[in-house]
Image (cartoon, rainbow, N blue to C red; front, top):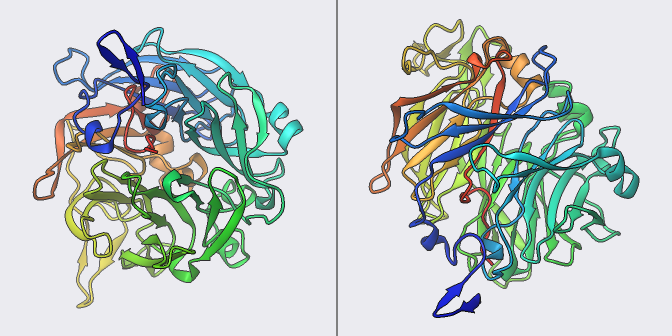
Length: 477
């Protein structure tokens, strides 16, 4: 693969293998989606450029803000126009960052090449055009394809019904091509997805119906079937739905999903938010179908002074290191970040844990109760004099696996419901140092980005991306 240029071989973006990616350049900048929607501040969301180079005089600072032209978008996840799946194409270039807006349905295309530190708006794909041509609304996950197309999952129709879900295809110029999935057998939900071309499979999680989760979390909506517990297995790249995995009560509200990065592997993991389990999915021994099992379980805690007698961890933010050795996730309610060794994929081992917020930190009216009746709260340190607000949510890992970045906004409506201080004071971004030899997590006391100190008022920080690619966007084929 690649093109011969003189004595050298020129390749496309990203890296030839996951292990090659671990030797890539150290991150210096981070793009962070920042949300004003839902905060009561009538400002457009923006893309922040954060300096993450410890040798820079502006280390741990926002050095640029790209304000978007509309109010009410709710920026959420992001993706690149090209990644390691395009590595064999020398004409491909990781230049444009794709920003789907969860609530407005608008898709922004951001040019990061003209000025890495100050990206600019390149194009807007308007929601009315998407609805007119495909009927899709509420965009979530964006991935690039090896042929230059972009695929984006949509969670429902314009009225928030999950039955209207599906996948949008954009061409390399960000024009609407139509839906990706084949007509016929229909998935009940759509949320996060990952494809593994050598196994001719894409698997999508289910989360819930926009008409439910956009109103805040209500347990009755779970009982009424507005949240999913399935994984949907599609033929890749043909788009036919070939299998539905019902995870049952162990898989309530399936969220972020990841295959192992090694493209030969036929296993991966999905977080199940409300059940607070991580489920491993895998191809059956005869290779004819896919199966699943609970790999990690976080037990609910008995608590006092909360809305329920037991508090689930509310697992979210799952990712896997590019060498497939470690799996990370956070418990948004409990407040801890966890690291598991998954060298034996069937038997993950907890090797690192640190509390960085949550509902149970000291000073909170809520306390956990142990089996012997004693109460406890988590010790959460301050960073540079700042208390850590809210619960950890989005995670991003450096390519070498040594630095884990964490923000603490989940979705504005849920933030307001469970962590109103984050709405009032804004969220933040922290860095956790990772021991990649033996396992272990430690907060970096020199890194703290306070999005509560923004010029236009406190905002909510969400997804993070490196200009050079990262372990949550790059797929190898």
